[in-house]
Length: 239
Image (cartoon, rainbow, N blue to C red; front, side):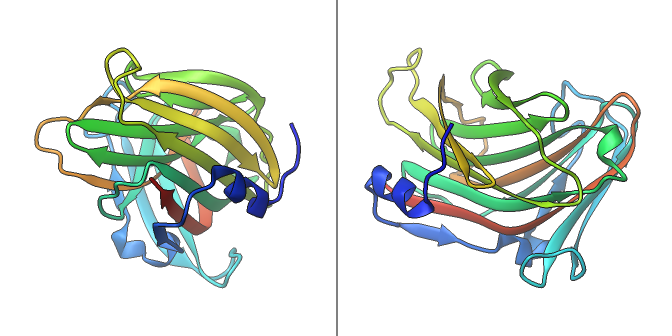
């Protein structure tokens, strides 16, 4: 594990910027809440959720407060569509703040980027399991993969979370294109991940699109949890 400057990381990718979606948190009405059974059909139903703009706990004067209330092991998914992209190299860049008053009943905090390009769905999912590790998502098997990187997000503090990701257009991953989670940055410490998983088929009726997910998961205690996110960016680096 080593520290790298953001400029150096971008230079190593060698890709020109194609599309930048910045400060997605500044448009609360653009965020969609998805609850069971529509989201995570294998999880536990029984949650309510809300999203709103706040000006108290922020980095740039305005942040998004995501909150949910539910039974044990329920969750709430918050996502924003940003439109189709043909870029193969992308970066997810956001800041997250977790409260000490709710961390005790939180099982995981999830941060995802995704791109739908028919006939394929590319999902770059990640989650910080509280008291455990960072996990990456294998969309073809619907399973989390332990990255063996401790997730130590201190409470009552802003954390800078960054993912560098890419995909290919071959069929080298079990007859499907490959989805790559290349590098994770947490508070300016960057770690090569190199998780490679197959893409999955795009479900019938789904159109081409891309976007960002943030999900809150409750643990066995259930109850209420919330998280602030700010300066949420999805950057299409290039082909």
